Image (cartoon, rainbow, N blue to C red; front, top):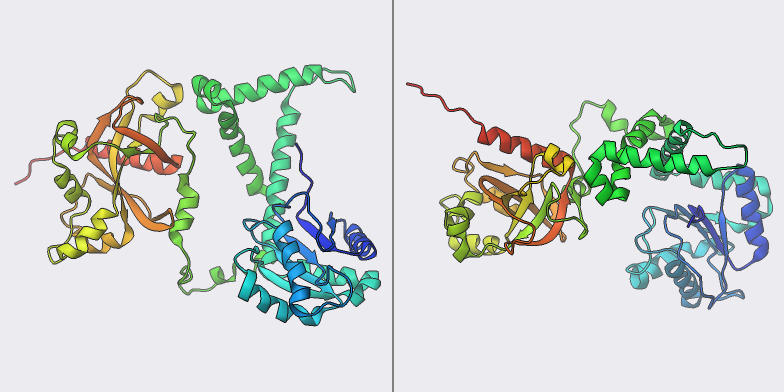
Amino acid sequence: MIKPDCKIIAVDNDNVEIDRIRAAFNELGILCHTVLYNIGDEVRMQYTGIRIAFFDINLSGGNPKGANLYNVVCNALKTIIPLDNGPYALIFWSLHANEVEELKTYIRDREQAYIARPLVIDTIDKTKSTNPEALIEEIKRVLSKGSLETLLDFEDKAQKAASDTLRSIFSLIPNNDLWGEHADFEENYGKVLSKMAIDAVGDKHARKEPKESIKSAILPIFEHNLKKTFFDSSWDNPLSLLGKPEKINYPENFNIGKLNTVYHIHKSNDFPKNTRGVVAECKISDDQCKKALNVKSSQILNDFIPFKKDVKPNVKKPLREKTECVLIEISASCDYAQEKTRIPKYILGLIYPFEAEELIDLKIRPDSFFKTPIFSINDQLCYIGFNFKYVLGLDMSDERLGEIKFCLSESLTNQISNRYANYTSRIGIVSY
């Protein structure tokens, strides 16, 4: 079902004011969804993906003061905008603009855990809404607020790239229908999409996971169209540091683990256990370890986390207790794509806390070890280490293969596979 474009909304308890702001946006050629809200109203749905929200401060009528005034607008904010909405500007347009600072304090003290945090808070004096030209100028001012402008621009470019992708695929599909008919197009549309999915991931995978497969087919076209878009001068300011010789670092409170997680970890329980790049729980017990891997479990842990000699036992123990053994599937990409009969191949890995890395003696860590970038998993910063010495062929029904945790990105999986291939094909030399 197609959802309405609700990137911009205006909330008021007065139809006249609603009509004025709608008319201003119409003049600018921008769609603004309006919500008539009175105290006690039940809103039918939350509007996800809002980027600019105009709210009247007084949604109850009359002349309320203090908490009686703020409580109503807080309830409206909680009801209409979800906590995970993403970046948005909150614009209070009101005859009570002088109340904004007190309202912000009220929200910080009582409601901030329940109201989506805005990127920008601004005000428009409602007395200007009676003058259409003045209101339009105020809206333009709000739309050009710093980082908000570039975020809106990127979202617009992404939507344009999606539209261009749809148009380019549409233009390629043979269509011999008479004007107003569509039977031939519908048949050819299905053929083209299905064959694109097969060519992208292979026949067997496409038939097993058709919706995921067509994503893989369409993504390169979308990426190409996004790269063709032009970023305007609004991007100059946030990227101005790139024109200076100084070294650029992330801010002190920036969580690079979360950024890497966005890039490389796909969380879902829908991945089959033989999916290339899937990471599953390792259910090999200490007693089974010697039989399965020809090594004691204590030795495996030492291979992954070889602490420096001066690290005390009371420091090692809690760090080791935070570790978790996993298995990653790394079958050959061609065999996986063609879904050839094979025994899925898994490399033993360990999720361990990032603080352990500083205590490790890197000189004795083996060449068979591969460490991922830092990730944020369950809000804990950690690394995933894989050791190429410990490889298992497991059927998906094998009890040693636990539940799926997530799947690594194709690029990271390829890097692990290439490192594994290099490790297993190393050529030794005799030297004197």
